[in-house]
Length: 600
Image (cartoon, rainbow, N blue to C red; front, side):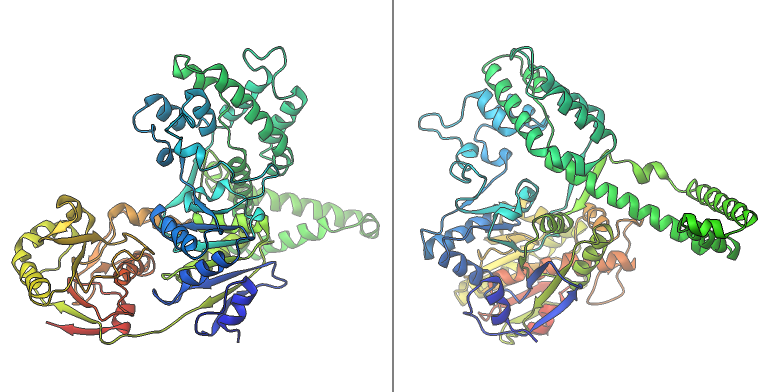
């Protein structure tokens, strides 16, 4: 069995934490890379271990992703504290980084229409003005050299992963769960794409010729009509250079010109990397679905049809010399059986919604699938630091991905810990109320006296710092303060140690996800199945309030309750003796194992 020290040596991380046994959860033949998954409990040194290694190796360049900018800023500052020479930069998307985004409609309209941010900056002439540097443009200055190699560490939110090439970095670190940020989605209108690319044949005001040669344009049109991702990938450097040149020229030509719509119309709004990824995924999904249809057909077919399929395969494998050895009658018979099999298969396929199967005007994938795809293209190891890692979900998504991309060969190794602190006590407030989300305001009004009594005791008498964890709607209504103490909501501040100095935590409410959460997560776990129309809950259990539907219940247990568990651990209850008072149900099982449970 491997140890933490051995695997960290492989990844390049320092051996500064106690050794924990590793467990291999998946190993393909001839693996190309490793998934190193550190899912030990919060406070066991996952992030700090990575921070210290990054700080100790300024000559290496790391790509670090996280769920929030707050988490990434914290990681970057911790690296800088240890070694200022290990330079890193937190990258933000255009809407967050541009200081004028919310106040200039022209900027917002152009961005929402798909205009590249760099073209918007040039057209608006607001980049790096004296005394007011552009927050978006400056973050990319000095980031890469002329050959595209990073000059410092990059820390990016997960939604920017598609924009960066994993292969140019020395190591990839994924902080926290990839399942909490929804999914990757893009709409594609191929007639629109062809029209956009055609703009480069003649760039307005540039002269007779544009930035794209007509023969290259025709080559692209043939590839896009055939949905040929491989052909477009081979043309990508040339096409991307033409797009950049055209857009920069157009942006300069439109400086301070009105209306903004003319600028939007003239710019080429095509993201080649996303387009190629969409085409590859969709083509693989189509082939996998067609293969499954034929498999279903064979299973449902009678013995005669199975014989027809076997004969069909036999006929396909015949050489010319083999055919000469067969009688004319036998060949005619094989031809008829082959034709019959194809006819029967076409009839079966006609019962399936082939349009839905083959259309690719809308593409979506989970962020974990996107990471697998980027890893496959870069052929690199990935280190995951994920407290709420769920093996079943990870393996399900990996197997689904390998069905589409069988060339994805990996070894996945997990590290776990099982610390307990029985001095941290969870006191369950026994009442007749369920503290459910739909009535949380009524419950708060009804139990405000009890909350104030608890706060007076712990804060006033014992001089302890008190914090409340509840639903977001309650926190926002009272501006982050309930009964005079700080409050935050489930799923907030994942991975950030913002509340480690608090002594008492009051959990007010049975943790449950919002209604639209189920639909989003269902597509992650069960992409080819129909979600139930309504979510009905089982209220018969005194400790649990979960969906009756088994698959919806699994979603809550594997994706929602782990986030609640992570929120509780922001106070570091394994390190410090924390008092937790729980109003409601759905206490994660991990907390019951780690701490002492008492009923009031």
